[in-house]
Image 1 (cartoon, rainbow, N blue to C red):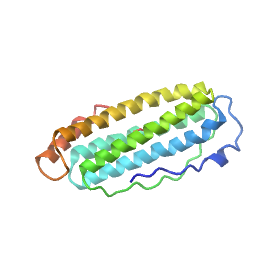
Image 2: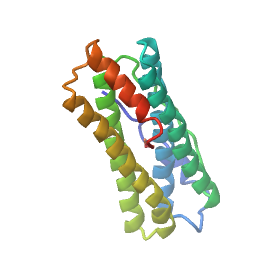
Image 3: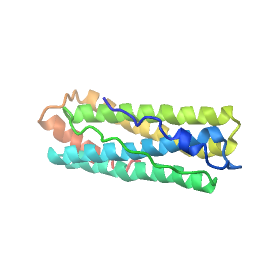
Length: 188
Ligand code: FEO
């Protein structure tokens, strides 16, 4: 079970002077999202290390690629707050789990994680619209498109696993899946 960082930023942040470019109500949730993206980066690095340990180079490279992507997501949010002259307050990032049953369970966990991040982005966009914070809403369009891409990618891999009847054990199916993941490294 993957857990997200708790929401802890709010009180500190709201004591800062207001920014004219972002609604107050969005500052704490975007700081929380910064933590969430950093957590995703840690999670994918841990998944990559799991694959490395199991001798699965395709899976390792696939997840390693996502580490930098999630850092990019984090940086975009940091840059946005800087642009708005709003405070960035970094939070503790919880350790991701390092124990996975199989490559199948990792892929499913990653897909579930992306679904959750999509919900977080949707919630931010919804709040931005509600507060008529069109700057933030506009910034979030990039994330909405990115999450669509992530969901399509992971759903494709889950579909491939189902098609191959792969359940996670060693053998040809595992080698095929690892090779397939290697082919997905540049697809996003
Ligand atoms: Fe930052 Fe994979 O979404």
